[in-house]
Image (cartoon, rainbow, N blue to C red; front, side, top):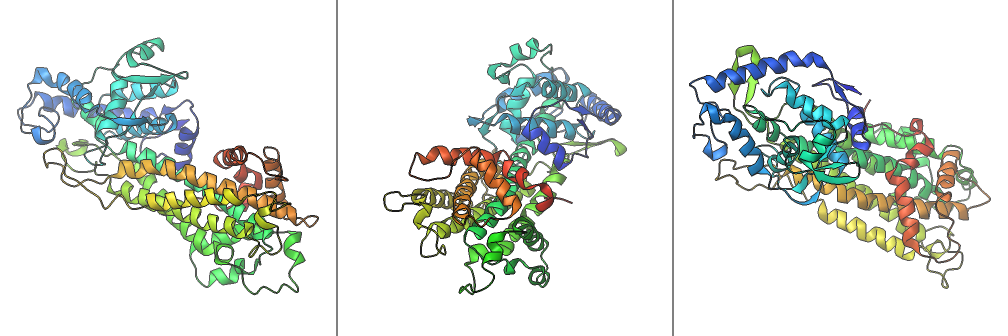
Length: 510
């Protein structure tokens, strides 16, 4: 894959997140990178104090550093900032971090040498993935601790994941024919200033949330058919009168998913029900609002993925090195909070559909808890309880992180975004959501099959067939966790979305 600094696409970013592959940054940016590096080298030799180049960092910015110590300064910066704790970030997220940093440096405003970009590119292409502890960034002055761990691996310190093993970084680099990088003036600072970890985590959250949002549209349509719900609330005339794009698109997708359902046709006449519960009837309104939020998140993160967010910045046109605050991750913090709200809300309406379809008082003639022999068997009784537990956990976790702040670094960095852990929490929330959607996949399929010999629509029949290749219909009580796990793998892997075809589902962009 060829990438151009400042022109990364969401499609490229998701591809790097999902699987390793070869990357090549367009060499046209090298001239700008070299020019900025020359400006930094000149500043090192000059008499003026320039932050982070010939001074200390943060509260120590007034401490002048001798020319002969500027290289030592950068190495010390990296080692001292390797203060991360907690579980390690997944390799897919770290690949994104590396790509984002490489593309940012390639804009030619950071003042690093070309060899820094080459080291990142080579490590990505050899699948040398730095070990980065997840916790330690407050989302301002850059994601300092996690980016320091990534940079440490580049200079032969810390650890690297390679070929399924965690290895000493120096040994892993040499095994692949690479030398540990020696950092020049500003290069350590250019590496650890920036929002790349917060952005990578938020992008990973967005990509998974979108996949599960699409999957929930499929399982929501399936629950509706299992309940013999009306499709009249999905008619375009209703949604045109309100006008929200997400709502219009969701209604269109639901119509496409249910088109040709014999179950729907079977109860158009003489159905004593006037209206369906909101969890069925208001899917376009609720899921449409979620879609609109995710599209806004995508727009924010696409901009951030192509941004230069370190400090100070080299303005080559005016031959200046300027201090600013692009490292403050407030846009990502808000985007992560938006994504968290969406995850919680999709889980909430999905759980209500699960609860409705297993309830004999509400499910329009289906057996209690979808068991052929309720009483002797509990069926999906406790699967619904699990969905409720996961839904509640996500609601509790969705409280905004962006409104929090605490002063750090002797009050020099006195307002921070908390974007990094705000985005990190999306991974756990998405795991919960995938399981909630998986449970609806199980209950919706079971419910639809109870309507036999009347059949659902063709796309939903295909989804049920995909599920039945992994999970048999529930004829009697059995060990349920295995079924839920298998269904969750289908949701997480995108197989539910693939089964119905992208032409029937709305898209994130475009």
